[in-house]
Amino acid sequence: MRNYQRQTGAVLVVGLLLLLVITLVSVASMQRSVLQERMTANLYERQLAVQQVEAALRSAENWIAAQLPDPRDSIAGNDWFYNLPMPGAADRWTSAATQWRAAPVINTDMANAAQYFIEYLGEWPSPINPDCASATTIEPDCLSPTFRITARNISAAGEPGVQMQTIWRL
Image 1 (cartoon, rainbow, N blue to C red):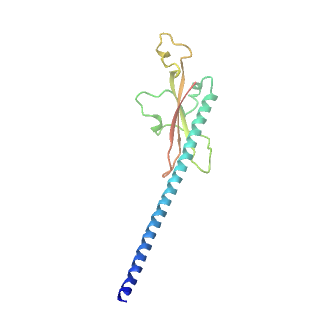
Image 2: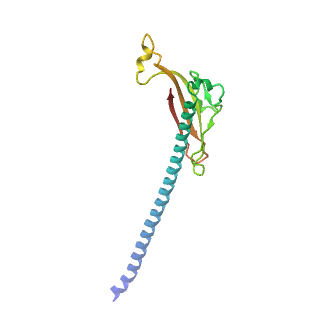
């Protein structure tokens, strides 16, 4: 009988230890689930910002295409349309003095608006025939006006910031 009485307390202690281990595993699992949910929400917000910036790039490309035959004629009339960059100068997208144009918003209730500006980069040779500019006589269709479009979203603290660029040529 003495042996039976000693084992009664041991089962209780072992049961309480197992309950403690199960509780700790459950709490750790819940913390991982909350972290994964936050990561998914951040990824979702980033994708919305990327879509907004891509829409701004497309809007700028459409604007340039609407200015044909020569979009350079519109440089003087728009603060956000810049002529050739100055050699050695800081990039325009890093300058506080750069004027940005607001792009149309594609999902107003879910993502912040985007902005863009356009830079004329000069006459560049065609990517199909890049050596045409080094010939002794340059063909009329060798060089064409080339533009760089820079777009970004307007992000607040804690929100994802996205900036993209594209090259557009006639």
